Amino acid sequence: MSGAAIPVTIQGAAGYGGQELLRLLQAHPRFRVVAASSRRHAGKPVEQILPQLTGFYPDLNFTTPEQALEVECAAVFLATPHGVSRTLWHTVVSRLPEARVVDLSGDFRLRDRAAFDRWYGGEHPHFEAVSEFRYGLTETNREAVRSARYVANPGCFATGALLALAPLAERGLLKHGATVVATTGSSGSGAEAKATTHHPERAQDHRAYKVLRHQHQPEIDQELQRLGAQARVALVPQSGAFSRGIFTVAHVELEEQTDVAALLRTRYADEPFVRVREQSPALRYVVRTNFCDVSAVQEGRDVIVLTALDNLVKGMSGQAIQNLNLMFGLEETAGLHHPGASV
Image 1 (cartoon, rainbow, N blue to C red):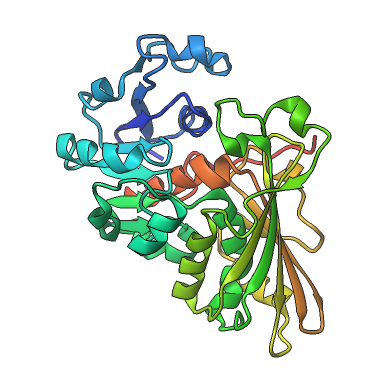
Image 2 (cartoon, rainbow, N blue to C red; image 1 turned 180 degrees about the horizontal axis):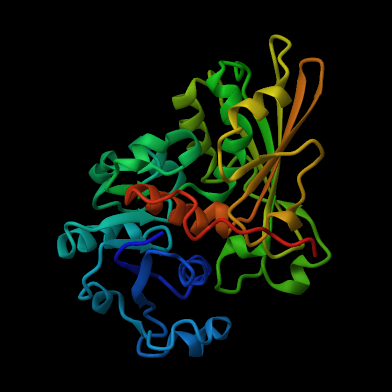
C-alpha cells in the first residue's frame, strides 16, 4: 500500500492498550506514530520503558499529554482510562480540530445519559458529544465508521458477545434475549497491579465478578437492540487464569428452528477478521491477532454460540486500528492481517 505517511498520536501509550497500539503500528504501511504520551514516563525513551519495542522506535520519547497535543497529527488514539477520555477529548479536538479520534475507553459508547450515569458515573463534561461518535464494531457498523470523524471503540466483552449474537439479532431471532458467560485474561484489568490480577491470586483460581453489573452489559444491549433484538442479555463475566484473551459462551433459545451455524457462515463469509469454525474456537489461535473465531452448537431450538478473541487486539487496539483504517479510506486489514500461533 503506497502513499504518504499518516501521522498519529497515542494518548496513554504506556498502558496495555497503548503498548499494543505501538506494537501493531510499527508495521503499519501508512500510519506513523509521531507522539506517545505517558504522564508517568514523560521524557523517557519508549524503548527504555517498553523493551519489547527495542529497535522499532529509536527516536520516540514519551511526552506529557499536553506536549503530545503540540505535535501535528491526522489522528489521535485515546488509550486512556474511563473518566480521562471524556475530559481529554475536548482538549484534543480544540487543539487538533481536523484530527480523527478513536476512543478506547467507555466514555462515549452509551447514548443514554441515565444508563451512562448508572454504569460509569462521575461527571461527564461533554456528554453531548456522544452523538458525534460512531460505535466502532466494523462488522455491524462499517459504513458509519467509514464516514466518522470520532469513533467509540467497543469494549472487549462487548466485542465477543456482539460478534456471537449480532447475526441472530439482525434476523429477529433474539426475542428472548441471551445469557452470555465470558472469561477474560488478567490483562483486561489494565497495566496497574490489582489484587484480582496479582498472579498468586489468579493463577489457580476461576471466579465470576460483576455478575449482571458489568459496564459492558448496557453497551451490548444498546447495540443488539439497534440491530433488532427484542430482549436484553444477562452478562456473567469471569476471571481466568491466563493473561490474554476472552472466551465467550452465548446461550439463546429460539422460537423457531433456524440453522445458526449456516447463518454464521453466510453472515461472516466476507468479514476479514471473523472466522467461522466447525469446532470450538480456541484462544491460542487468536492471541496477538485481530481475528475473532466463532462457532455454533445447536440442539433443536437451544443454541450455543462460542467466540474467542484477544482482548487487547480485536477487543481493543487492533479493532481501533481497523476502525482508523476505514476512517482514512485504507484497506480495512492494513497492518493487521497476520496469523496467530499454535503454542
